[in-house]
Length: 181
Image (tube, rainbow, N blue to C red; front, top):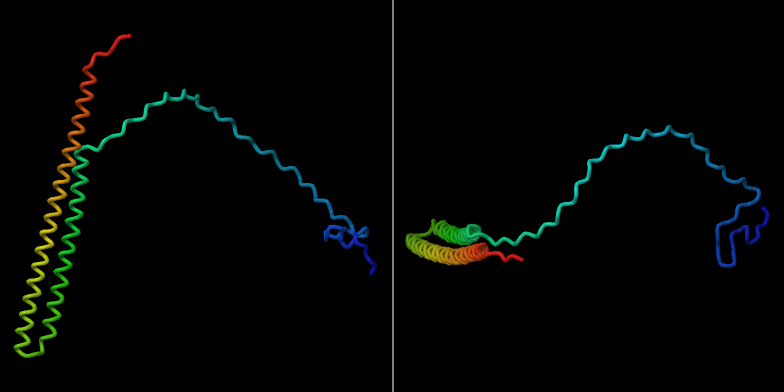
């Protein structure tokens, strides 16, 4: 094979480059021309609707205050939610206590009469404790419900006062005579 000089091997002064094609290699074939395609049919122009004049800019609506009814409704919802949570907790406490009582009863089934009396006493005290905790939970629920109702009433009163005050202001403005310029 014939020796190649630096330019043929692709070496340049700044570094390597792609090797140059040799004179003996044929040039790459030119791409074949593509046959012309059929002209596409253009869709008929659609008549556009006449444009309307842009609407006059509107004033931003005033922020609406919640009505007394909406305030009452949200307060009632909150009260119900709290009551439901507390009732659920009380029920869970009763179940836990009842399970403990049942476990104690099963454990003492095979023992003597004295053990039975002890179990009965323990069961009685467990039931008493369950009743006591349930009563406390019920009291807490009632107390929370009362507080929530009180807060709801206060909020509703405030909202009603605000609405009435705003209505009076509007009525007062309507009664004022307008100045002529």
